[in-house]
Length: 299
Image 1 (cartoon, helix red, strand yellow):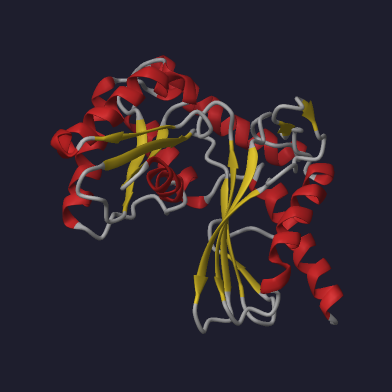
Image 2 (cartoon, rainbow, N blue to C red; image 1 turned 90 degrees about the vertical axis):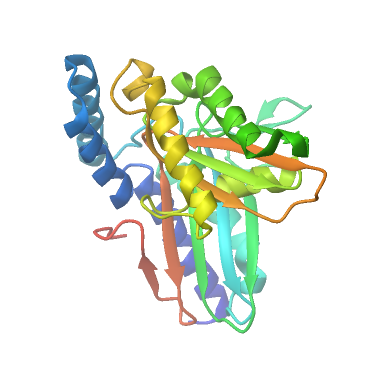
């Protein structure tokens, strides 16, 4: 294939993948929901989980997104400097969203700020958002694609704590967020926490935390301990599935961190809902791909 054909092929692959994971949850999310279903003892909680599984069956059967809010499409790309289409990736990502909007289909969720009109295309000024991580001397691309829904991830919270607040202040902030808007974000939730030096650095880390596979832990032992303790604390709130009470409130808590200024502790929280629609796909230099998040996916 010439370069034009390569660009078109990769665009079509990503478009099909976006359409696919809008209907089929990642393997780790499905397994976690099944695990949580077994824990619940109240009839209402059990019924809600059963309805979630029925939702997945119907989404596949009817070939329709599993939630009417297909969110804002966001890309988290780790791209090698030698990846053959590195110069074309912004265009490829944008066009894959355009194509998926027509064929998935995706709800039109891109409203131009200030001008206040829906583009009807799911793309607009500076969207879709792309978070870049450049990998020197690599010829591969690994990308997480995420449907950031209006009720779960998009109403995230971020602030800067004074250093005297300490990590107890971080925990307090997370729990305050969970009790204020957690019930509206369609639990059980995947909670992403970013701890860094400012609101913007913490915010992007909290979103990256949602891309991690369930069951993974922060490599820092103290951060991993906070992940476990926050999981216990949020579960103790008793949100339960869809915020209607239950034994568990979260699928997990993931913390991502960066070094900070000694005078500040930036902290941010983003949540993924039970229908955590993310996909991970990796491309080699010949553009062959492996779908990591959905082992049985066929595009």
